[in-house]
Amino acid sequence: MKQPDWNHLRAFLATVETGSLSGAARSLGLTQPTLGRQVAALEQELGVLLFERVGRSLVLTRAGQELFESARPMGEVAERLPIIASGQSQAIEGLVRITASDVVAAHTLPPILKRLHAIAPGIEVDVVAANDVRDLMRREADIAIRHVRPEQPDLIARRCRGTTAHLYGASLYLDSHGRPRSGADLSAANFIGYSEADGLVAELNARGVPITRRNFRWTTGSVVTAWEMIRQGLGIGVMFRDVAEGAAGVEPVLPDLAPLDVPIWLAVHRELHTSRRIRLVFDLLAEELG
Image 1 (cartoon, rainbow, N blue to C red):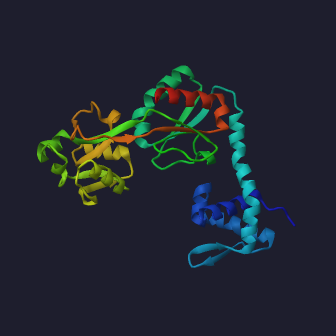
Image 2: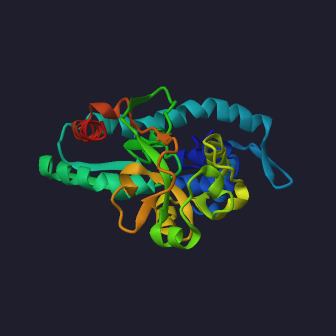
Image 3: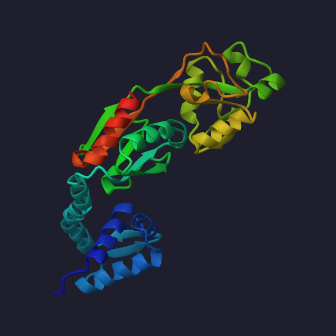
């Protein structure tokens, strides 16, 4: 039997792991028709049917399940090869990818990167500003700055000092709608929140602010966008203290209200931590973030 093409096998593994041809195509950076042809080519190479369509879903056949169980370790090894290679690099130059939420990327990272350039001008940094959790295991980034603790066993995680979040509003909004003296005064206020606002509603309710999901007239998946909405007077919102303090035209709302804790975690793949350039960036970030 002819040895299957690795690209075809990789397309098959990605399809199983993501559950669809479209998801697999996105994960591999291919078009869906190209990925579909690769899976079909693998079936032809092996002479077996790997998937059956049930409605709009793909279901593994018995042969497909057996192939997946046999080939999955190969895929894991293939993913680790570039990590191992990068981990052996001892040059204090080259590219380091850092992923962080958009607000950390915009407000916290720039002064740190300026210091990094003074220390190691040969290091290039690609900042991936993303509020979803980027996968270090698949090398979407070398270092992650996250607000939740990473759970993967192959990652080294270090907790930094974190920050707190408070309620803020533009002075022009508060001039028009009044400055609240208690949480009850905010029951009819317009709020700016995030796409998943239920958790924020619960946090504010626990602090004596009787709002509901209906108070959130504007929501967004971007913290930077939410901050601009607050600054331009669309309503009241939560923002990190170190971003909001000193901002012109913005003032705290109910400053005595208990703040929301915002943890900050640094994470890097265990093997990448042996790369001198990645270790240097990781240690500088840990120092600057506390």
